[in-house]
Amino acid sequence: MDKIKILFSSFLILIAPLAEKLSYHINENAREAPDKFNIVTHYFDDKEDPLSSPELFELRDQENITLLFGRFIRKEVCITGECRMVQVWIFWDGVGQFLGLHTPDGHPLTKADHLPFTSLDYELLHSILDDTASILKELSPEDLISSQPETFSNNLDAITSATVSVLSDVVVKDAAYTCFALWHTVYGPVRQEILRILREKLDESYLKHHLESEHSNDINWALNELKYLPEYQRKLLPQIIQLLSLSDVNVGHMTLNYLKPKIFGDSLVHDAVVSVFPKLSDELKYELLWHFVSENRVSNEMLYTLLGMFEEGKFEPGHLRLIYGVIQRNQLTENDKIRDQITRLLDHENSYVQTLTAKFLKDLDIKFPK
Image (cartoon, rainbow, N blue to C red; front, side, top):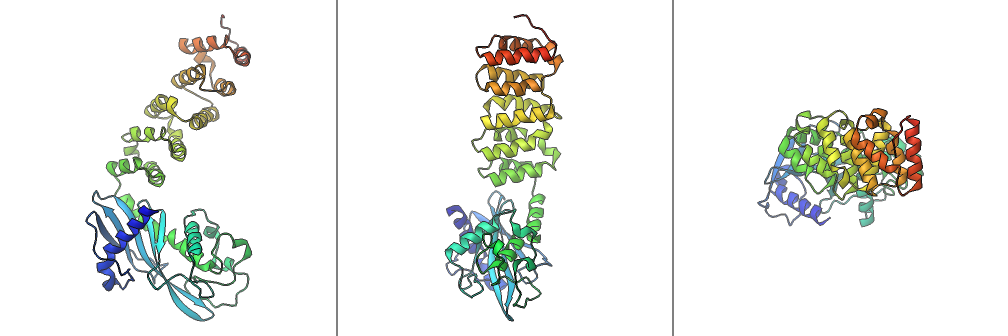
């Protein structure tokens, strides 16, 4: 959170010289721009949000890496014929994910009774806007009210006093339209413009930087973009494989999901996965094992690795059944190393493993001398 506050502060400081020209409300303490940041102004014609500023600001570091985007949002709110303007800065991080918001001094967000948002209201609003799969995605303005005594302007009203009870846990009380309007602003056309800007910057170096980031959002963004950039996939494979052995389980799952479609179609990917397999967390090992089961195939190299890990006690006996389920008959009859491994398992100290192995060989109609 402290890092976010620093970025927000830096952003506001940077746009201070533009405040008078753009008629924005900038904090009084905005003095001068820090040398380590620079700002790029993009002009965006948002036909769905004509009252908001056309300027979309991008904050970059000295290496030209995008740190965040910000836009000053104006939305007209009309309640019982009385209209006023909601004004707020919305920020996205360097890969287009919602980062936070900032209300100018003297312009707090308010609810239907004109009371300003409390600190708890702002915390709830932040969590709502951070939810990419919010129920608000599928709703229309009409879904937010159970009765309609208000008259609405042509623009999306930001406040209502008639909140449907089913939404009480996913909107700020007495501010359903605020939540609705801002959520659709965060994930609407401006975000698509941000993603377009980022794609124009993509090259091997930029992707590598994000793959080596400490933040899972950056890594996930880079992996998603790589799906459509085959020219960089092999070049960045070492960085991608390295992600599997990180302590962050979520990053591991994201990386494995990226690699799964390529394991059997790209020998370079396959060999890299085989080499890193022993270093994976147990959770990722089991996930990859289930992938082999679902595909009903496993290479000789991976099979040798799996059986070897079982012999070393790194798999439970129950998982041996899964391994046996993907072994083809010719992998035993034509590969001496694998055949030797299976032969040793016939004499395993665990009687269940002995029985399972004997049954497996019988089902394949293979006889090994003990």
